[in-house]
Image 1: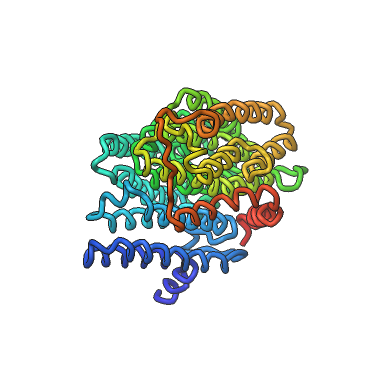
Image 2 (image 1 turned 90 degrees about the horizontal axis):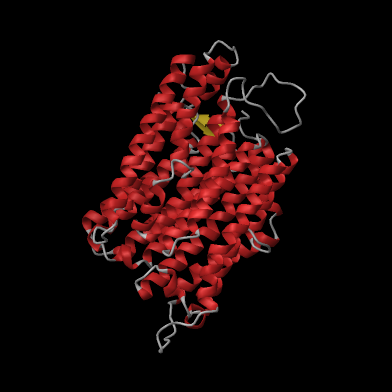
Length: 499
């Protein structure tokens, strides 16, 4: 028994390191509440060690805890994205006035951040519906509290409450869908579910209802329409660091879990003569049509509503919803190309989206506002900040030579290869629409003068500039040299599910 436990723990060394780190953070906070630098250092060190362990686990393919967790390159890829996003957010938090204003509870802040990271790392490898639900709740419960961390902000508690209510409803619907699947198959293991469904004895109506209900839970996690209503209020009311984290890491974990669940549970392996790297769903499962509708609705509504936003954080919230729509297109294709395109998109999305939120945070520290009109003249007051934000926004639009172009190009290419040209055209048109509201910010920074007569330049410490460049350089680098990233994603997908 002890040997089995040690074996299982050896397969999740990165998760063990994060667990130890969050416990140490909490203990240090209880002993010394004033030493915020030490808490940041401990959190960053634990995440760096976890990242090192994950980099050595690339290519490992096994399972843990009686098959409830898969340890494969697919999970490792997303774990790297999640841990790297957490590490960046931890450093960002050191420079955040919102977070530093809550000095008495800052240890709890890092504890919540690491708890979310831990839950999401388990989410991406969950191979059992019960494990999926538990890991989803683990990350969500920490998210509810973290989104309301800044108690002095008037809209912080409201954001936290809305997040909780929507999350509770979505989790309940998802759990009901899981219970139906269990009733149909008698198992919660996703491989076992697939084997039972392949026998064709399940009720088609019950199968449709259960798959749609499970999709609701995933849709809430990734902010897909119509499960997106919590997103703008939570993103606006939560601290900018938490908003940035939710927009990248939480979305990545939700997508990884959804991709694993649908690919393993609902794939019909008996269909022959399919092109290599493609698959079809079991007859009676209409998830592909649902995903197509969700993706089109999500990117269209996200982009159209973003046109009317004057608060930059709220604008980026709707932008994040639209980005989820683009990524869903990669799932619609039902192929390795589509999955690897989504993974590449997430890798580059990490840098450009965290970068955009980081600049918004730095500006808010100086002017105490997130209104788009307050960005007038920013190009003169802080050229580095303005140029960096412009690059991040151009990358989010998907224009060359930025990394965002590679992400969208791969998704649209996979659609064209799957002969879904109309859907690809809709995606391209949505990208054109998104250019308008991103350009509004760029126009204010460079083409409109500040209303005040006196323009004082913004000055930022070297450490803040280094973090900015750390996010800016990969956004440009992966736009030109992306082969290794693409190969890593393709390898991870090809080894997905292999034991």
